[in-house]
Every structure is written in C-alpha cells, then in structure tokens.
Image 1: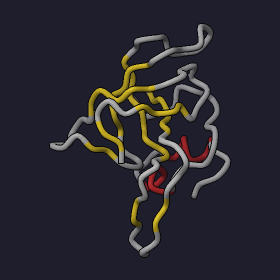
Image 2 (image 1 turned 90 degrees about the vertical axis):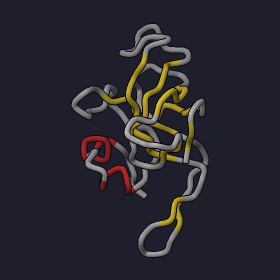
Image 3 (image 1 turned 90 degrees about the horizontal axis):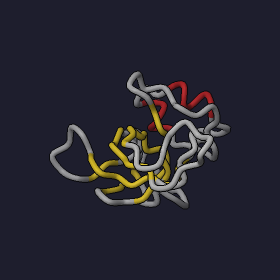
Image 4 (image 1 turned 135 degrees about the horizontal axis):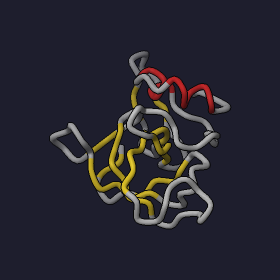
Length: 121
C-alpha cells in the first residue's frame, strides 16, 4: 500500500530516478496497492531518458513494502515501493522492467509489463 506523497523507485529504464505520487484516480481514499495506476511526478530524470524532470506520468505499482494478502491465504511483500511508467494505452514507456513484479500486476491486465520482467512472484 502506498499513499499520496509516497516515493516510488522506477522499475524500468524510462529515465526517471524517483517518482512521487500526487494522485490516486478512481478511489475515494488516498491509498493504492499492487496493480493499480497512480499519477506521479518525476523527481530527477536522466537527460537521455524518455521522461523529463517534473513531468506528470501514470505509473503502475509493481512492488510494495506493505504485505498484500492473496486469496489462497499467503502474503507477498517486497523490499521497496516500485512502479513502471506507462502511456495512455497502458504500455510501458521503457524497454526493460527491472526486478521481480507481483502476480497482481499481470492479473490487472498489464501483460506487456509481465512479459518484460524476469520474474513474476
């Protein structure tokens, strides 16, 4: 679970160095979890990357520190809060996805992100 003003580590090679959550669309509360799309602002960017500094982007949350309970009774948690920058069609802007991602991301319909990563947990 992440909330407004939380920082995310970018899990792709889009050029962002840090992402700050500024909005959780479609939710009454201000909390988002695995597989949900949030609105972020880029805090620091690589000059040769596809995203620029202070740009507003949509991000899919792929890893969270807070554990998430699954339907079979197991829990999954990661070492960091991470996200993948996407475009309006839901496709990733980067060409690589770094680190493992949660199975909830693939179940949410982001099959391209799941196919680019090395491991789905």
